[in-house]
Length: 226
Length: 146
Image (spheres, rainbow over the protein chains, first blue to last red):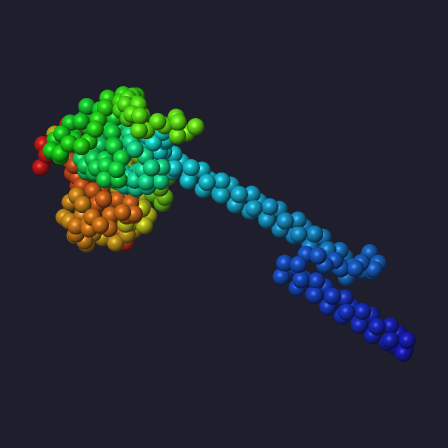
């Protein structure tokens, strides 16, 4: 082997080592999630290292695309989960809606199934809004309730009494025959719990009471408002 | 047999709907179906509150005297009852009577299992490893209350 040939081989060897180290660096970048690096392709197409470089570049591009797509999908999923959470909160609030149906009159329409957990939640929400809205009267409408356990019925009556302690009237409406029997058989004291046949009756009664109060010369609401 | 996984508040809604359907299909009146809904609610809420997570199993049964019935089994992985008799009383949990001053924000009044006892005919509690099973049955031809 001549001196020239040896030098050519030696240089080739050095070039190969250099390229391999560049490939290794690129792969290390890919491994830590940096897909921006591209290997330069200055070798002839039939050179094995050139083919390797092309392959690695293609792989990096494919990985980058896949990573971006999965990140997009994850973001979309997170957004959906957030929406579901919002809707859940909305449903929870709607399950015990407290509506101000008239000036100072709160209405709590109850539908569905009442268990102890729900009746507790309801009490807390109602008492809080009586204070917040400075309500003079609250109407609890249980037309939508078929049946109540004695303990829950007891809790309901206690809720009515608690509302009175806050200085508001509490009216129960829409009690069905089964629940009426349940409450009577419990033998609790019903004085102070006002009941009406329907929400409409209760509202009419309240408005007529307040109408009398408003007619007094000392409290001319319209004049104050004007 | 229907099996409801209970891991969140919304699973209790599902289970309740399933129980109502199953009760009506067994031949119970709508009123009793509503009562069984309350039972399912209380059992489901208890799983979430004390049992961490679990399952509610709904299956039809037949009794020699009392005809068809519906059995609800609440399985959870929580600790066993400290004192079952206390837990079944109204206004108590399994450690004893609840202090009325501490009821606010507790999400319950200690009356759940009491309601379950009142609205069903048989109650059995089995301790499993880990957790416990509360098995209740309501018969169509209801036996006299014990």
